[in-house]
Every structure is written in structure tokens, then in C-alpha cells.
Image 1 (cartoon, rainbow, N blue to C red):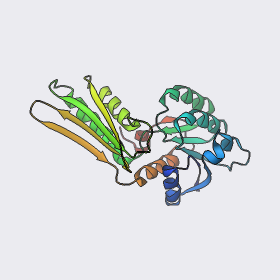
Image 2 (image 1 turned 90 degrees about the vertical axis):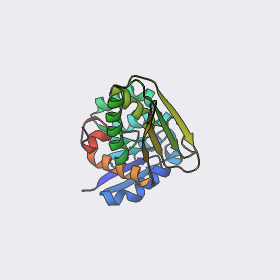
Image 3 (image 1 turned 60 degrees about the horizontal axis):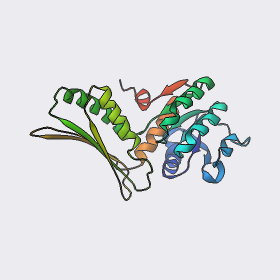
Length: 232
């Protein structure tokens, strides 16, 4: 049986997900964007088709209200929008009360999630050596509004959780049509070590979001892509 998907946000990511949905056994039953869901009226509409999962790539200010409306309809959610983290605690509460499943990730790329695991291990190693300072640099297309990226903040948090307690300088670049680049670096007295992930195609994020949608259907709780991919 196919997974029935509502796309909330129909920009670059929404269109990329739509184009690949059939390859993942998913059927897009509605496409909501500013023209038909400016204040959530598309989600509230009685004509909204029955759906299993919503994939949310809209605007940061809309995430909380969109998820609340989807939760009220019992629709599981995959959230890819970034920059809305101040609403997360309340959104988690609403999702838990409604008994829906939510996958929230700053980045849905398989490579990025494996990269995060590598970065965590590197941070634990370099934490032992005070002569090494660290930084994160990320670059994205010039239309991306939040900076630093959600992925950069997740990487910084992962490094700190792994035991790296010194300052981690974070810098951003917005230019052209860059699909996404993240570099984590360590610099010591005599050498420099860098770890870099570069996305070559936006399809990597769309594929991850569709994997998450298939996985979260019928589950209850708040999950990450590490849960979807089984990364310890």
C-alpha cells in the first residue's frame, strides 16, 4: 500500500520530493503552499484528502501552527524546515498529546547523518588535546534564510555532547545556488585537519525525507534521522 503524502511547502524541496515520490512507494495527494495554506487554511480544509504523513518544508514561523493542525487530524509529520527551534518544546508536547509520529531533522541526507557520526568521534578525540582549536563553516544558496544552517548547529551540538568543551567558531556563506556544504576543522600548532560534506544534488535531501515518511507512518514519538537510519 502506498504512503499518502501531503506536501506542506512547495518550493524547491517540495517539488524535488514530489518528483521522486513514486520511486519510494508514496503518493502525493495534496500540495500546500502560500497560495492555498497561508494561515493553515489548507490543512484545516474539509476537502484535504486523507493522508498518512505530511512532509513539512515551509517557513520557520509556520512550523508550530502547521504541525498542531496536522496533529489534530492525526497525520504523522516529517519536518525539514529549520530556524524554528524556539517552538520545539511546545510542538513536541502537542505531538505527544495527539499520539502522532514526528521525524525532525536539520538535514535528511544519508551522507550528512553518517558525517555527523564521524564528527562526533573526531570531537571526542580532539577534546583530549587543548592545543587544537575547532571551527565549522557552512555554505548554501543565497535564498536560504537562516544562518548558521540547522545542520551546522546540530554538528556543533554533537561536538559539544561528545566532550569538546572549547569554543567552536561557526561561520556561514550564502552565494549562488550552492546546494549545501559543511566543513568541520581542527587546527593545532603544526597541522590542520578538515572533514567536509558537500551535497551535489538536492535529490539527496528529498530521498531522505521520503525514507523518513515511509518509516514514521504509524509510529508514535519524536524521532531523528538517526532513528530512521538505525545509527547508534
